[in-house]
Length: 142
Image (cartoon, rainbow, N blue to C red; front, top):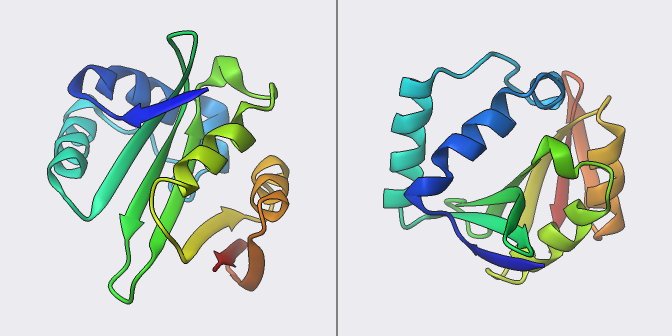
């Protein structure tokens, strides 16, 4: 797998992945995102030097994305979203490992308690559950 910074031509794919019904069910925000809202968000992320949006590819095929948002106290909040066609193939672990090597931690992630795949993913990469509130588990990794 290769990992690279997102480009403007990735916007449509990321919107499609974000609005996938399974993705929405597992996301903290389950609403459908409009193209206009997504475009504003996407352009803002690309322009913000405190944020890094990464795309994972295998043989030129996009398999997912990881976002690293710099936290005020240091470290990054981590978010991952897979291409629905790449789910269940083990690519999430490889993608997240590569993304975590992009910037030094510590890292924080928020995962819904009913998202078993993401819970296993983060725990398998050394994230520790720190707190749970409203059905969302906060994970940390130093």
